Length: 264
Image (cartoon, rainbow, N blue to C red; front, side, top):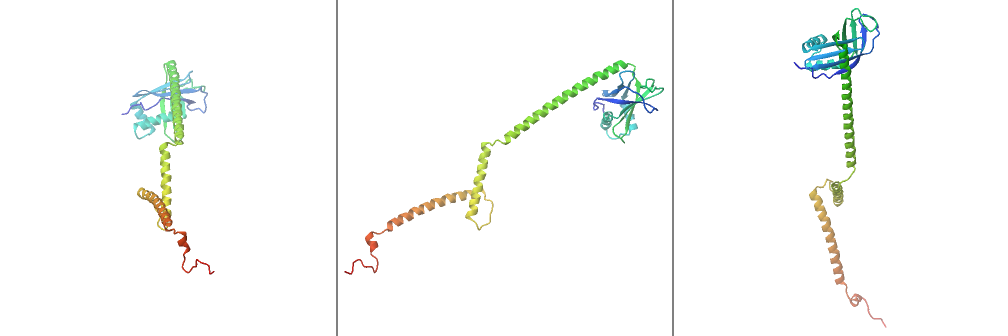
């Protein structure tokens, strides 16, 4: 059997109703539902004036309530359903007996009814008048203040965490637009590779285009360098041959069938 530690304290406002009457004038009713310990559920509802009602339920009594409500599944699901029903805002204090129409001051019995949503099972817990009403009202007030302070602290922590996450996100955005030396070197390498691929395509226009690998790019680079060197050497040799073949002016003047003297 599981305990009631899964149930968080629930605070809320209940509407009042006298059983068998269409309307009744009630002061605002505040309630608190919590686990007194791991085996006991504690409930208090009060208008902090004339009506203060209470109830306690053991694990065995809650098992009987579970059968009445008709909630199957695991025990944790039933405990969660109780918390959800009393957190829904659909909570009513129903008073009975010889109650007057004015705030049910003469009521001798009461029950608290909670509905999670329309069409869902109702949770109804019988109540008795609190014998130590002042102490019970004080407990509810103190617990409500403590719960409120805890909630404010939790919200402050969440805001601080959200602010920290936003700062980290902004820092990541700034880092993403800064180009590191490694990134710049990588980009230049990609540009050089692209230029060599285009050069290979120009050298082999009739061949099937394909992405050159690193070996082909290296060979293309060496070939380009060798071609430039060979071209330079060939030009120098051609100049030398031309220079050696140049004949003297007198030899160039002798041509077959030509006369060098005048007819006179």
